[in-house]
Image (cartoon, rainbow, N blue to C red):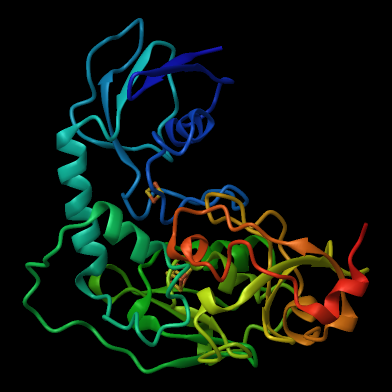
Length: 318
Ligand code: SF4
Ligand code: FES
């Protein structure tokens, strides 16, 4: 098994492991941020460049460094490879540039955006960006687009990570949306404004790292850090039925998939569970969900140490 050293920490990994996967095995202290890679989606990664690292030594056999930063989500580990992420001032500086580019067209919508608090771009700019932008041109703007009955697209917020396109390609049957045009003109579009109408289309909301694809049943109802996440499940014939219910008081404001520490869903859920089961009586409650991300969503007293809504307690699994 090849051995790789990342920011001074050495690990042995299975053949075919990427630098990003190896870094995640070491731990969050060395793992580069990733805005487009998504473990559960094949061929994701390679679009955003936030995961760049320096390969200071290519391998044991060929110790030459790689001449430029490489995307860690698309570069395989070689035996004896030495990688620098946070320990490389060059990478820290280059990543600031990547963040600046991602923000070039992104609106300052955070005070009204439903994704605020669980937005990967917000966290990325806070942790890896510069305080100022040098961008002086007008940002590109788009009208809001309805994608079917449940999803709204704010193209102005999109960072072209292609995750939603991969969901449409791989999780739903009959893909009707994708990226049209290229470069500065690229945009997510439903072909001839067709609605995405199939059982798993709601997963585009969970994979979108920003607030470009939002849940129409939850829009503008609350800031996420004021809601209380609770694990619940139900017998569902379409998906695993394992979800997180987000409560405000006695009311379930939204239903999402369960996400891991990288912000990626553990299992994709169906639209019926996500959009049509908003009553506590629809679910078996398992307990409070700990949000395992170094984001404002796990910082607030609202998400931590919270009480399970009183009326759900009788349904708790022992
Ligand atoms: S809409 Fe969201 S998930 Fe789709 S490409 Fe844009 S940022 Fe990525
Ligand atoms: S996460 Fe590697 S290029 Fe986007």
